[in-house]
Length: 464
Ligand SMILES: *[C@@H]1O[C@H](CO)[C@@H](O)[C@H](O)[C@H]1NC(C)=O
Ligand SMILES: *[C@@H]1O[C@H](CO)[C@@H](O)[C@H](O)[C@H]1NC(C)=O
Ligand SMILES: *[C@@H]1O[C@H](CO)[C@@H](O)[C@H](O)[C@H]1NC(C)=O
Ligand SMILES: *[C@@H]1O[C@H](CO)[C@@H](O)[C@H](O)[C@H]1NC(C)=O
Ligand SMILES: *[C@@H]1O[C@H](CO)[C@@H](O)[C@H](O)[C@H]1NC(C)=O
Ligand SMILES: *[C@@H]1O[C@H](CO)[C@@H](O)[C@H](O)[C@H]1NC(C)=O
Ligand SMILES: *[C@@H]1O[C@H](CO)[C@@H](O)[C@H](O)[C@H]1NC(C)=O
Ligand SMILES: *[C@@H]1O[C@H](CO)[C@@H](O)[C@H](O)[C@H]1NC(C)=O
Image (spheres, rainbow, N blue to C red):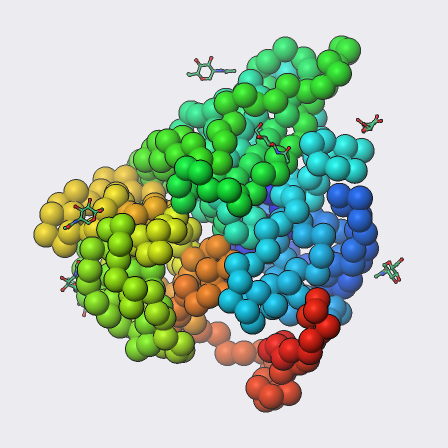
């Protein structure tokens, strides 16, 4: 919803994982990426989009289908596409900020299906409208393609029943608001049971840092849920008065606590129990990617030692044997007094979230509370501010898998690493051979070092 566009690209990756298991239909798609002009917030800009549309085309598949996608990039840039709207050239702004060490820019708006909605300038003619029939129940797929913040989402006078996350069923959560992190997806049932009329679906930032933060993003994005039928709509749709403001922590915390796997006979869970790799990882990137942080201190104390904030650049990865069972404990910290949530995302594998809580992880006592009954199976988990999360997964998908914080700015500041899962012993358990026409990576590093001009007119280098 926040951007179906990059959302479905992710969906494609998800289905890609199961190619050889698939039995259903086979779909072929051609995506052409090129620059096109779009006008939002009173200004026109050119952007790299799929098939001339923003959000891109929707493709529909059923579990078990096989999807082939041919992507042709006719644009000038490598591909990262997101749901936040920036008036300026976001690649240029981000490159400048990375160069100077500044915080990357705040977006000028969030969008729902590509539209900022009635409350943003020059946007009310194109607000996304969703027509419903009274009495029906609809499945809403929420995809947060927002770059850098967590989001509260609600629909005026309508409950939401969350039944899935990251493509796995969860025990139904009846709620009037959800908190969704970048990279997360949710399947939500909505019953159109209210008087015929128009109701805002709205979202705004949840800022987990602390009360009193000034530079949170103040934008409110809206779309309209509109009942079909014969009636005179009110002048303005009603707004969800339960939509929390940026520093309301408890609705987010309460919502996260309620996420549990469906874990029934038809959808059983299978938590790895033979853990041969254990890692406990704090939010700092380290030089020789170890299984433990370089030093242990009270990660959540108010005045942590300054030297713990220094990170070291490196390209260190962790090798995993095929089918090895891995446990990771993510530990949030209070460094520099800007502790916040981190949406931790693993590519290529889903994991069970067997534990989470606040404070410093205790290896003696915390594992006793692990949930082996109905832990949610996710691919993006919110590591709570000053808290910890324990996950388990079985490395059954050979390949090179990035794992990282899904705040794009944290990712670009190195809050990421890579697992290399080795091949199994059969062709079915091994990575596929590259296609014969796969172009080699023949560009050297220096030929990709481009010059660009920053807003002060200075010429700087960047890696393309
Ligand atoms: C976008 O609009 C600008 C200014 O009107 C124009 O020069 C440019 O060719 C357009 N780009 C595309 C891809 O249509
Ligand atoms: C995208 O555009 C290409 C080229 O025009 C077309 O062949 C393809 O069907 C389009 N794909 C979708 C999913 O709309
Ligand atoms: C959009 O806002 C303008 C200015 O307030 C108003 O004149 C116009 O009728 C609105 N359009 C819609 C579709 O609400
Ligand atoms: C939402 O759920 C609550 C709790 O079950 C219920 O009291 C309320 O009537 C529901 N509201 C709507 C609009 O269905
Ligand atoms: C968004 O809504 C909040 C809460 O009503 C309000 O404080 C804020 O000013 C709104 N933002 C904008 C840009 O109008
Ligand atoms: C760590 O710091 C937190 C916050 O100041 C405090 O509540 C906690 O007791 C400390 N833990 C230890 C083991 O000192
Ligand atoms: C546990 O995992 C190791 C390494 O993957 C494997 O060698 C061993 O056979 C496994 N043990 C059991 C009981 O499955
Ligand atoms: C981190 O994990 C290692 C390996 O399991 C363990 O020896 C160590 O005690 C753990 N440290 C903490 C603070 O949990």
